[in-house]
Length: 332
Image (cartoon, rainbow, N blue to C red; front, top):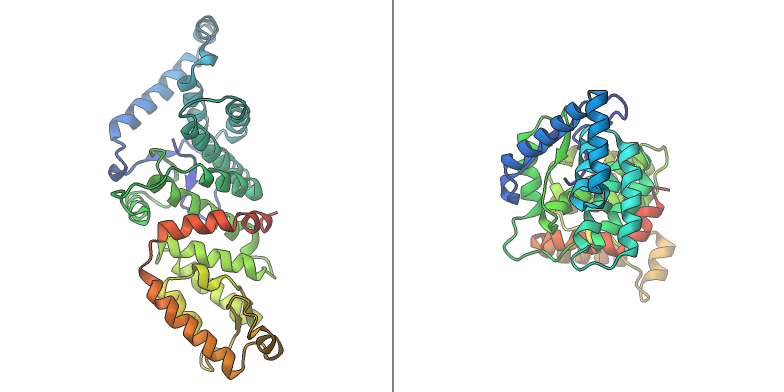
């Protein structure tokens, strides 16, 4: 179970119904797995619906030392997520992470990855966005290398999005692979930024820039949010993001920023180029409006267009790893 997710912009935290478990056949997960999980949840509820059943069952669990069974602990956590009992799930996950951190187990990396992901989902649901971001970025470092023949992550996310209603709370059931989990990481981070910082009267340029990078991943799904961000930039009149050309390769975004620099587009003061010792003094004095500054910007844009076909998955992993410190700090 990957963790809790929601298609809405403002997921409620209380009195939530059980989630709709979602899957994508491209990831290799079948409906049979979901049916078995839901049957197990129903059986658990039945055993705890009667005082005698509950007492006898707990006696058996104690006798069997069920708390030493990794699969049993995993089921309990998955059930709590399914039932939207995030506080209790978070406590169990924190205990499990402490155990995993002290144990040296072969092949334990996948279990650590799952624990971090589910912990991030709980923090997000509890509106603790900085902690959700921290756990997500930690999980990214535990992602296995992508396989050559893996389906594109954006294609997986799009297929899942078409299948399920936006009004429901979803619980993705996916394998612990890079191609299956990266879409979830990006969505969680983007939603955290949208909820925590985007609607502030004054949002830091770096936060807006990081949102731009994340929006590329599932384009054009985030086009409406992109247009809202552009309106925000026009209102403030300038934008400083010196790592723009490291990570922005979406052609629609590049065209929009080229237009924003023109008279018709509003002539925004855009400082998107990395520091250049040979020209930094000139750009600082003239705020990048000199002929030399315009030429640098034009050349950089032309080079960037060539990169539009680059692998977004690799770019996103590089971004999440390299910029992890500022990604987390901006949500504090």
